[in-house]
Length: 65
Image 1 (cartoon, rainbow, N blue to C red):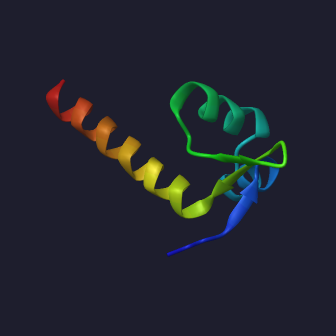
Image 2 (tube, helix red, strand yellow; image 1 turned 120 degrees about the vertical axis):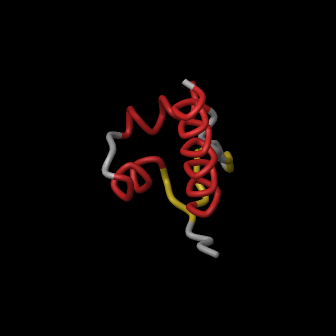
């Protein structure tokens, strides 16, 4: 399991997204994060699990439509 911990900027680079998109996903879509010492971090394994769940939800929507 990937236990890599990333800042918002690092996660954005890893996912090839803007920092604004990552922030938006956190605030509006529930992207998992944790805060320590006033900073926001992301555990890569949690992000991947969240993305997989989102993918499943989208597939179910598509199949039932």
